[in-house]
Image 1 (cartoon, rainbow over the protein chains, first blue to last red):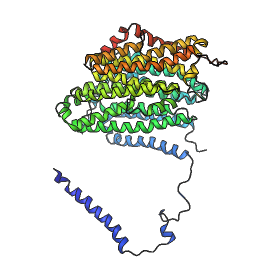
Image 2 (cartoon, rainbow over the protein chains, first blue to last red):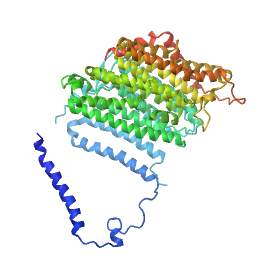
Image 3 (cartoon, chains in turn brown, purple):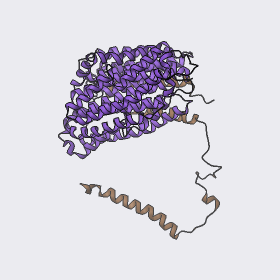
Length: 118
Length: 487
């Protein structure tokens, strides 16, 4: 039974060997030229302009959290959309309830002023 | 996959979860009312919540004596669930009553408090009614996440923040244990319905099946955390001390009962075949929990910390009834949880009154002279302390009597003896409060704090609830016995 897992085991071994091998060999036989730009942390090819550990407004967290909440709505809506015909009225009512509950949260957040930046 | 919509419709019986539906809708409505009504005082939200809680209670009671399943056997309405729902609604109602005065005084009177209390109650009720591992988890998470918010509700207090954070981190960790246990049990049996798991336990080898055994113990760990049993009690003192006092009252009664409800249903319905394994473990944990709780409480001056350790000890007493596994013991747990709700929330209601703005966590010394200045309040506190200590003629005495006699019935004589000794030790720190109230002179200048009408009502209800079942135990006990009969 374990035999069926052999290919996965082999894949893990080969990828480990390849990964480790490339790092080890290139550090052994590769040329080493250090410059200031080369030693800087990689930032999409742009030159870094300062430390990344800065304080930034907590509003970002609030927006991120709200985004996740309402993003989940889409996660649930997709499978429902696919099975829409089979679920029929039942699915429509259930989904309606779900959206109404989310909408209550939305109104609350809106009235609380969590969506305003300033 | 074929979905038979007609069949889906048939399995849904909304009456079974009607109390939950009422409270959820009310919670959402209050959330909106709170932002649309520009009122500084939030007392009206407390009264509206109370009306909803009482309404949900009436709806829940109508189902007494019947057993109805719904949602494809994932929730059930039986006496057991209804009895526990009553405990949760009672805890929520009393907590709502004592909240307004405290929150106004501490300047954190945000209206969100009441919807969150209602959502917590919904979670607890789902836990008691759940007959599916996923529904149990859903209820538990709804309860826990709301409780984390309640513990850290006083945003301006560092202690409250600490309580919320600690509770959240440790609670999330314990949820992990629970979920892992559920996953293992699902792995062994291939189903999450507890009735089906129960029928498969013996078939897959019972205690001989290591995965099942580990799964059961991991799930137990999750619940033991929620009921604050040693050695999973470390969070209790800090969280209980830091949380706003009315919320401490609420979380010491409600979630503890919810944890017991689910544990009872799981162990007695799903794992009766493995009783030898879990009753030995619970024996040890009961002794450990009682002893750690009581002996640490002896040394506490801060009254909230003292009651936190005392609540650990009380979880230990209930575990005694659990370890016995007899009908006397388990109905004793139900009786005890109900009377504990009265006496503990009552005691916290007094703490709410005694506390001063900014330093709401008083010490025992603050109670000096209370007996002369506020004789009625001191009398109420005396009743609560006597009941917590387990002295006749209070509900606490009757509860302990049934818990320990359950242990004797099952042959755990030593467990009962250790329980009684522990109970005797606990008398010291409960009586200390009474000694301070009546025999120590208070400060010259006495703050004549006001007792608002809701708090007074909560005090009267709690005092009555701690006394009457002690005098006429059959009043509640018959319901507790009927409740455990079904499982």
